[in-house]
View 1 (spheres, helix red, strand yellow):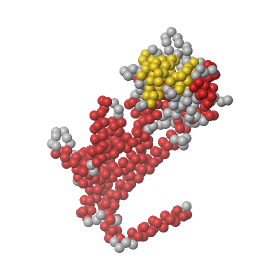
View 2 (cartoon, chains in turn brown, blue):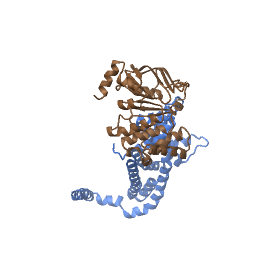
View 3 (tube, rainbow over the protein chains, first blue to last red):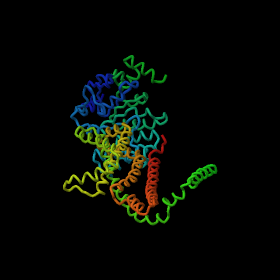
View 4 (cartoon, rainbow over the protein chains, first blue to last red):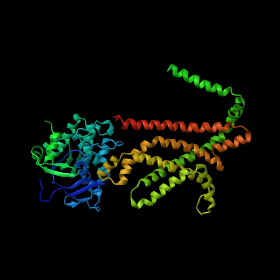
Length: 250
Length: 258
């Protein structure tokens, strides 16, 4: 973990979350330094998505604290919008706005939330779309695009606000296998550029390649975490070994 | 194609033949389909019809604005807006329940008799208000169903981008909701266009009142048919226009056929 003097970028302490009687997250501690790529792995229902939704305040938490750059954001008095405006989120089902063109999808938040003038927002969006091979689709509506293109567009939309933290919630899970590669290529590039990311994923080989830390979640707890080579090849816990046997080929 | 044409000719021909050969047909032709009376009553009905059109053109934007406002008020979660939400619910319940004609009577005769200073006494004014009040209740429900049909993940997405609830409504939810409810809205528009004829019952010289005036004076009902034609001519183009709009949105935004 690359903790510099200023402390971690994101810190989760003793997080607990319930849906009615069901305990979804239990005493979760997580620390993410600037430039870290944290991969959350675990079977479905283990709490990966919920953890991400708690971090960007889409879910209320029952107990614990979440700190962004040392300031507690789980405090109910904190302006949630201001916090969310500093994080980028990409969802499994893209969630692009179907009535807006790709370009307008990308400039909505910069213009309306961050007050960037239209020209500037569009110039920045076009530059990012170009970088990710989508410039030709800027004027089209999302439903004209393939799944992979839509997910790349959703990534660009999240990046347009220049977030200090990117949250990716199983962004390749809804894609055809041949489209997964083009999306992961972008995430890989972002990781190389030093983007801080927390991502829930089922792509183990990808996690091994880009993650600085891998967290294995089981029944709402982070059962173990560490560098990918340790977690994915020589896990300490039996549960982790069982999970990896199921998802890893061979 | 050939079969379709033959079938159509047969069915339509049969119906026409049935009507034309009925025992009362000559009388009907005389009292309802007299070209002379149609020509004679036409100018007065046209004059009156402008009143219907004017009323519709004034009422429709107000109804759309008020209906959307009511739907949004009902949808709001802010604690500060709870009274507004209660009013919106009550408004819909009450005004959707009262027959439009009754509402026209109540407002046209009731409001001026309050004798309040500054309250208009014009029949046209209060008849228009009655239509706005009645139809806003229907249109509000149409908008509300549209708003609720937008998937919650769209709101989550807007939240995640840092948009406020009001911004999410304005830029994300409402635009999608409106596109979806255009067909039912059109239905209400057409209904409203026709219901402007209700004002004939409070002695406003609209198309229907002019027709009745002529019919009672000349003992001929042809003007009613003329009025019917006027309203049909007005509503059909609107229906086609809405179809075309819907198609354009669909082509642009749902090309993937997913």
